Length: 269
Image 1 (cartoon, rainbow, N blue to C red):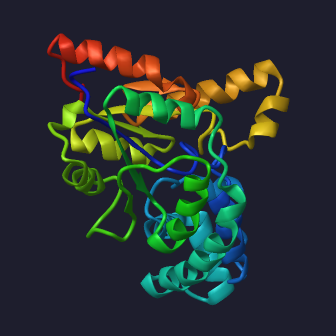
Image 2: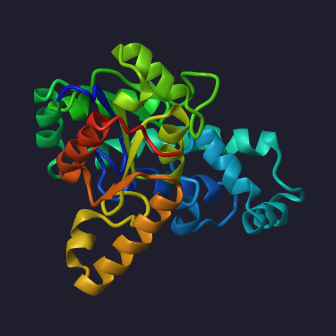
């Protein structure tokens, strides 16, 4: 490869944690501790945002805001968001090691990308405290990206391009069109679009489907097709230039992007 220079991956639901399940129980439990019921489906809606922004988005949802008002006598404000966030982070940190397995095929794909001369970057909606638990577990499985940018490292995170900009600087790669962003969430795709990079959405292994690997494998073919199509539609709606089931399917997409760059194409807006 001569045109592409780097691939920047998300973590949960993309490279690790098939189904992006680690944060879900933590969100539900954090709200339970404030006497506010929250379903896993509701908790998934803002996935990809930095976790405080995720909680703020949940609080802005009218049904959840009303449940908070019933429990606490007032609609949620910044203090309420901060209170839930303070409970959520240690809960997520405690469980994240239980969901640290690499997505099948992720390591071989990353190794093949490196063999093509690509740098491997990473951004995440997790804060540093959570990633401090995850990094050694990923390394033990052979996955060590060239950089890591966490939520909270910069003035803002997804869907802004700031974490991508930090990756460009850390990795020494430019222009943005020479970089591919791979993510399983709509804010993560928006992050790549805002930075001017190619974007690849991950459907089956990610948040949009939300099933563990055994649950996915046990689903009937018709149900798999329904879930895959719905997830792909969400990611394409967010602007993804390509959608794949998991990162195991990425290499042919890199070939296609390389060919487009060779024809002088840039990422469509």
